[in-house]
Length: 135
Image 1 (spheres, helix red, strand yellow):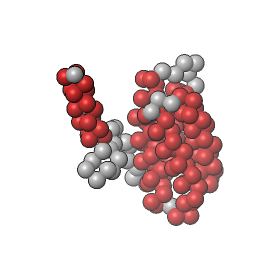
Image 2 (spheres, rainbow, N blue to C red; image 1 turned 135 degrees about the vertical axis):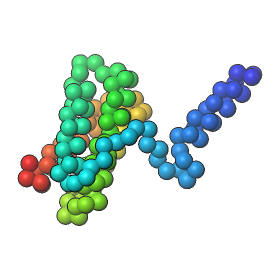
Image 3 (cartoon, helix red, strand yellow; image 1 turned 120 degrees about the vertical axis):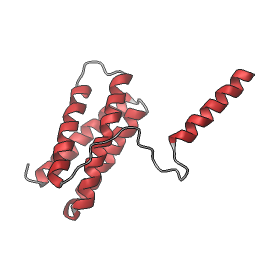
Image 4 (tube, rainbow, N blue to C red; image 1 turned 180 degrees about the vertical axis):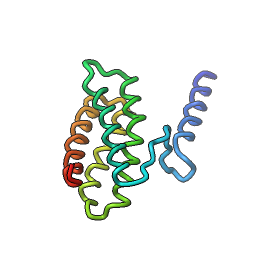
């Protein structure tokens, strides 16, 4: 019985640490912070290349998914910078933001099949964004 009580207390403590008091999302890793639109695109491209190395491995394990989870913070940071600084591409960037968030969530939740799907969507949407910038 004491074991269950201790387990419950530990679970509650971890749950409380996962969110701040006003339920804002907690950032577990420090993302790269873009300083310009070009820098945001460069960060996104370099981090997507790292994700690609992981996602093209023959076998992806929990450690790999945690690496994707960590990298996703920089992807999110880059997309957020672009959205905040480029009104002309808002809808296109918003679509990219949605699939990057999926990539983040599925990697964090260790849902490999959904992670693979969201990774492909990130690649497709990023190609559209890159093309819109002339790349």
